[in-house]
Length: 88
Image (cartoon, rainbow, N blue to C red; front, top):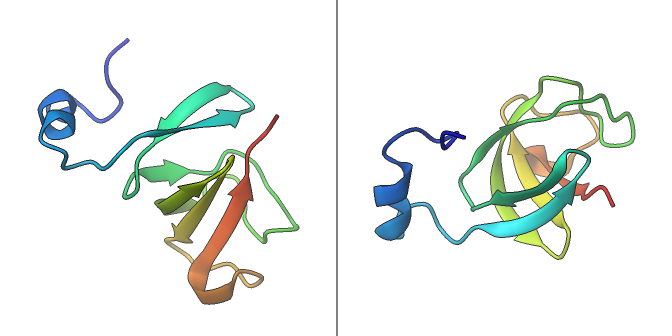
């Protein structure tokens, strides 16, 4: 399977430019996210005020959740960030 970050990803990872990947359990299996990774949320979550297709950037991975800066701030998220719990 090709790297979703493209052909430059291996050299960027080796240089430390992408940050440290951290594993998070998702509904689609274990995924790895470094800080700065751009993601798309895949379902509506009223409690967080986000919708399917919302774009964001991973700020940090803590435990089994992500703190994401949303490209379009949601009404219920403080300072345009949300902590998204992992699926388990």
